[in-house]
Amino acid sequence: MSTLQISIYRYNPETDSVPYMQEFELDTQGRDIMVLNALEMIKQQDSSMAYRRSCREGVCGSDGMNMNGKNGLACVTPLSEVVKDNKLVLRPLPGLPVIRDLVVDMGVFYKQYESIQPYLQNDTTEPTMERLQSPEEREKLDGLYECILCACCSTACPSFWWNPDKFVGPAGLLQAYRFLADSRDTATRERLARLEDPFSLFRCRGIMNCVAVCPKGLNPTRAIGKIREMLLSNAT
Amino acid sequence: MVTNITNLGRSGLSDWLIQRVSAIILAVYAVFMVLYLLFHPGLDYATWSGLFSQTWMRIFSLLAFISIAAHAWVGLWTVSTDYLKQTGARFAFQAVVMLAIFVFLVWGVQVLWGA
Ligand code: SF4
Ligand code: SF4
Ligand code: FES
Image (tube, rainbow over all chains, first blue to last red; front, side, top):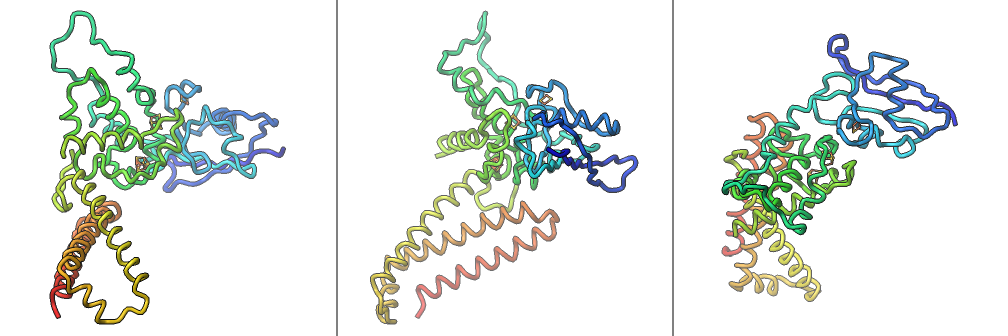
């Protein structure tokens, strides 16, 4: 195997007037390493390269990026999964402002997350010990609570690209459903009312890009469908 | 909650419902038309205008026209709010679409009940 050709999006607002692609060559010695490992080897060649990472095992959600056109976590994506014709193109997550190189400004993403009030709300008197949940009720949260907020899904969603200030996006909506589905939460009506307008939820066109890229195998489209059902049965 | 004043139902939920219901009506109308044309191969003017002189057919057609009007408005309004970021351009586009839909609807009624 010849050396891997890696092309990386570079932009340093202090020195570059426009972003550009920089070419690197990497000898992986035939090993199928993760994209993040490859990036770390490149950083040894060029220490000005900027990207986020922390846990390097798909838990913290900080190294979401676009690898050969598909969003994912660099730390759990082996080269063999994305490299085509010995080439790899790395870009920042699409649709968010770039701070530097592969580092994006997640502000608007977090703002949408905040808008769904991602915490348990319960206006009944507190029990002395804890609010109990049956195993069946707890099961409803499976496939929802595992989200690590990596933003791979929302930044793959065209509806989020066009209206990131108005459309909550798949990540936020998955969490909205996580609290709607929680038997201990009593703010269901208020939560639904905030999602009824033409943008917050209904901008979802069911394209399912979100499902295709989620590194945790979650399904925001299904959660969005469930919220829509709740809205419908509430209103008719 | 995002507020908006130019969408049809004033809520995303009603827009969504309008879009589904109008799609079903249009599908039924289209299937009916295709079947009618299949069962009347050598269709002449008398049979065709006979069909449209019946009240149920006029009501059915008007329902289809209203469905097209609503469907087109919800759809094109969505397109305009996705792609036209400049307020003036978006408003102009929405005004033109609204006018066109209105003209076609009135014209449709005239065709159905005129002549
Ligand atoms: S749903 Fe999946 S892709 Fe989206 S933020 Fe959560 S973990 Fe990431
Ligand atoms: S299914 Fe909805 S939320 Fe997911 S990518 Fe498509 S439009 Fe976006
Ligand atoms: S470094 Fe934490 S998810 Fe990749």
